[in-house]
Image (cartoon, rainbow, N blue to C red):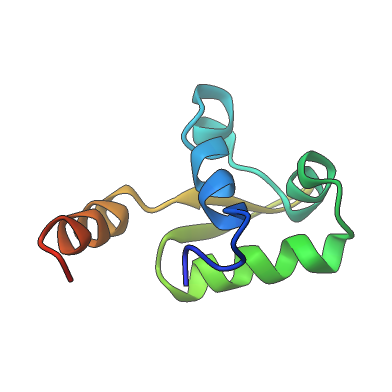
Length: 85
């Protein structure tokens, strides 16, 4: 699920959220849409899937929902892939 679509969009989102500024405040669907150059609903679809997988944690703020990486869950998933799962 992380590798679809083939262009690595979801992996790029996770990488962006690891950058120092976004890691602290998170990114909104509008932020992701602008970075990807896609419509808001497309960005939201990617964010919802990553959230459903437990890799992102959305938090509500005055200026909209912000998504942050769930580092514990990412470590678990990484470990599974390293074991050849």
